[in-house]
Length: 379
Picture 1: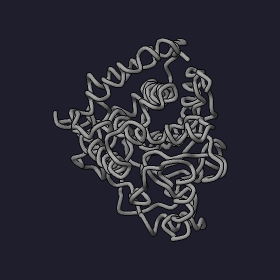
Picture 2: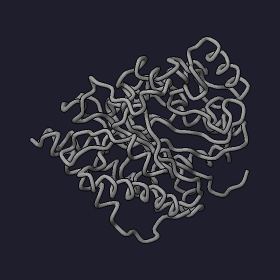
Picture 3: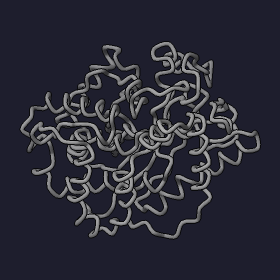
Picture 4: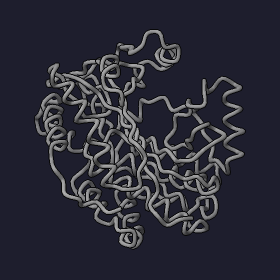
């Protein structure tokens, strides 16, 4: 296995709306004008995909440039990009179709309704060796809750607080409901074929879980790991920091398969590993950094924030070796001062309205896009 940094790419979902923070659906018009954007079933959000790169500075610009183009298009119509991963000030009682003629969109609306009307960040790491890919899937599934906790940005829905830090993950219809702890690629292929045959999955894309294998012809041709659990991270520096931590954990695994593959070292069975991973995801969705989780090594309880600090210490030597240690700084800032949801909840508890909280973050997003950042990212 090469010790070079992996290819990385992102799928970025965004909400559009007005400067009051209210959602306004324009996906069908945007996608006819800006070719890099694609429609989601509901027209209030849309998506763009970055070109894979191993270089973090290149990735930063590939994340910001589409946002700038979209923002300029929206500004001419007195619209903007909205932060957050749920319909914070929106109306979740109605589904606003982006393409009434799309049969798959019809299925989504009928089956799930507005539970799917969310935004998120999907992080893809290029891994072509199938054995290594499935080892990485196992490790990342066991630690996915930590990445959700760092990214949580959806405490509001329909103009009110939800009591959770990631309402998106709580409401999103995970499909199928019970996904096994994949032992290898053959296990995965057989399971996918069974789900399709039973109609549990409608197509090969219909595996909505915290992390999954991806590739040009699923489930048979795979070349990357896709972490799907993260809420929308509008701060690109934090997104790259989260990606760096993910990549360092995966590279550490490649160097120490016998010590980091849960299948090889955990005291828990594969069934138990799947169960506690799913439980951890929900606990992180509820309380993010303050959640009590169970460690995949032995099932013992651990506070999410402490677990993340522990991982940062473990990857620090490798980060220095690969010249990406500076990338991780924003994670320490989140651990010290809270993620997006925690900051929003604090502002709301101190008397700010949800609308004013969202409006402040709209301005912050635009400010970050306009900043000229020196080449500070390693890798």
